[in-house]
Length: 272
Image 1 (spheres, rainbow, N blue to C red):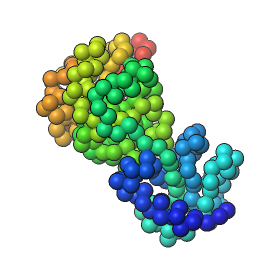
Image 2 (tube, helix red, strand yellow):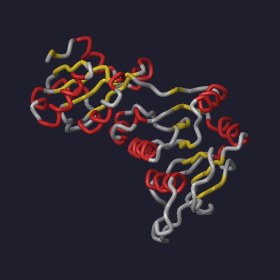
Image 3 (tube, one colour):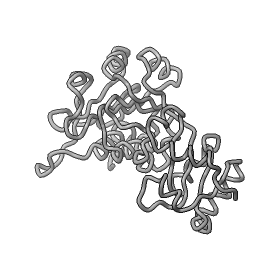
Image 4 (spheres, rainbow, N blue to C red):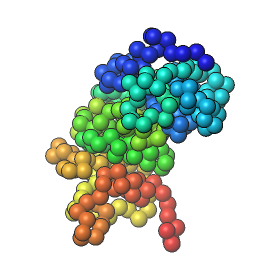
């Protein structure tokens, strides 16, 4: 196994910065679980880097064998080098350089064309959801319920943020369509005018989620946990909420989003 070249090491260090990730269309993934899922898309894995100690482990060894068989470059690096790059205090000894980027800051016409081209019928839309752990968990739910994409409005944390990537546990690359940095109001107005059902999650005062999945196309709109959706979006779509006990003011946005996506996506049995 060859060691990282100086150029490769500089590139990995640079990808810890958002501006570089955006400019290069690349990001980093840490850990066996996330990278194991990522190997489903070998064409997007630029290289893997592993410490000598970690490469002796059975699970990482098997993952590296798969990577080599898929033609992915595998490099070694020291623990000190990994500590400089990794976003966790206790990195697993394995990190990947991924060549992938969402659609960034699309104009309304471009986004509508993209959605029509990929025949999207079920979307999650995030308005100012800034906690990366929540966003990553919501991306996993989008993947789990086979939605067609995610629209991330301005104020929502970027999808290639290391904490988002870790919380998503490999789901980022499995999403059919992702756009971020969107001015949401004109997009949602066009979609609503074209017959999309928009469900706007609220903490109080909305209707319960539908008992059966609604006809497509539909979109679930989630706002920040503290403030909900912005005032420019507060009259768009139909307000839905999840009833809870009086002792709980509101649910975590990732929990609420997962429940609502389940309700909108899955047919349930009479007993379920």
